[in-house]
Amino acid sequence: MQLTFCRLRTHQWCFLLFNLVLFHILLFGADLMEEYFLRALPTAYTDVNVLQAREEARKLDLSPMKDNISKAFVIVNSESCSDKEIFLLALVFSGAGNASRRQVVRETWANATHIHNYSILVLFLLGKPSEESTQLEILKEMETHPDLIQGVFPDAPENQTLKTFIAVEWIVTFCSQARFVLKIDEEVFVNVPALVEYLLNLRARNEDVYLGRVVLRESPDRDAQSRGFIPPQTYPEKYYPDYCGAEAFVVSQDVARKVFVASRGVPLSVPPGVFMGMCAKKVGVVPVHSSRFSGKRHIRFNRCCYKFLFTSFVESESLLLQEWEEISHGQDCTLLETYYGLVSCRVMTYLDGFKRLSVDALPGLGFSD
Ligand SMILES: *[C@@H]1O[C@H](CO)[C@@H](O)[C@H](O)[C@H]1NC(C)=O
Ligand SMILES: *[C@@H]1O[C@H](CO)[C@@H](O)[C@H](O)[C@H]1NC(C)=O
Ligand SMILES: *[C@@H]1O[C@H](CO)[C@@H](O)[C@H](O)[C@H]1NC(C)=O
Ligand SMILES: *[C@@H]1O[C@H](CO)[C@@H](O)[C@H](O)[C@H]1NC(C)=O
Ligand SMILES: *[C@@H]1O[C@H](CO)[C@@H](O)[C@H](O)[C@H]1NC(C)=O
Image (cartoon, rainbow, N blue to C red):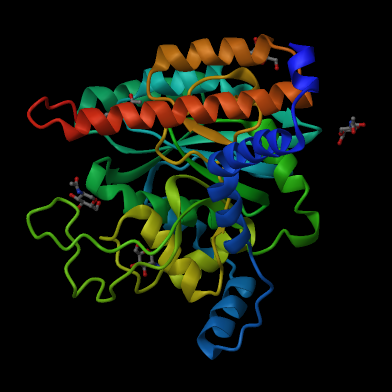
């Protein structure tokens, strides 16, 4: 083996090297390009409206409104945040009836309360269930786990944008000392330590942070038969502003305040991610892309890969428990292991994607979701 390697000619070495480079470009090139083009550039705000909104957000004080805003909640949980130094508040969007999922989240990634001495707070945001018995269970759950916030709006898929607005309102009113806020869906696994590490490294620039998996130039759904139909009266332009996918994104406290100020006049009938993007655009906040957020994709499990990623979509509760078991009992990953992990989970996830594509392409089998 060694002998044959030694006998390779220069052009053969070049060919090998070329393939190695090509392999890495194919695997990681698109991510690097995206991150390069979507990095935040220092912006000079010249638009008067943007400047005014930013100034208004800076002066915003909702403390006299607390009682009134509390009326929008069944469980307002205003004490959960008060008088505490909080580095990262993770607000998990949970379905009212999904108590078992919430328990799995508490037992897995949400169990961390401190990373490097920076405090983490995980809270669940729900709406109202349609059944009274579920509401009684929620009140009982609150006695053992006082980590719930519940709005008065019905918890329906159509109301996710309203839920997002309520979340922002709650943050700026009752948790204005949290430095960063992670909005996360309950189906998503979060690597809290890696995310905290990343946010700590932003030190120089911890204002105007709006970070996630950026969706570029998406067109509104103009199919009148579709459930997500957006009529031109609601949103007339051809493309939405760029926004962070709603499954998981991070904003700094100042961005929450800016979005709150900008939300007046933004329709609640657009999808939740788009709503955030439209508000952010009005106050001159640019979304920053990181491919470490997986969006709606499940990343095939590999311990060292999961120690690098920020999020992965893990719908199954038993899978999440099993993955967590491996993550929390494994040792630290060396650089080489991380490299191998990234290559392996990337390749496997691509293959999973192909599998899904080819299944979707077969008509009549009906495997689509
Ligand atoms: C209280 O909130 C309601 C809507 O939730 C609003 O119409 C009303 O003006 C608010 N009252 C005060 C004093 O701000
Ligand atoms: C949560 O509940 C909703 C219905 O309220 C359901 O569609 C969804 O699949 C549930 N998710 C999980 C993770 O249990
Ligand atoms: C959560 O973390 C604590 C230590 O911080 C540990 O004692 C406990 O067993 C963990 N809970 C679960 C369910 O893993
Ligand atoms: C963590 O914070 C506490 C109180 O804020 C302090 O007493 C302790 O020394 C800190 N630990 C480290 C490792 O920085
Ligand atoms: C969404 O919330 C609004 C306001 O509370 C409510 O009127 C509406 O019925 C809800 N939508 C669904 C589909 O439940």
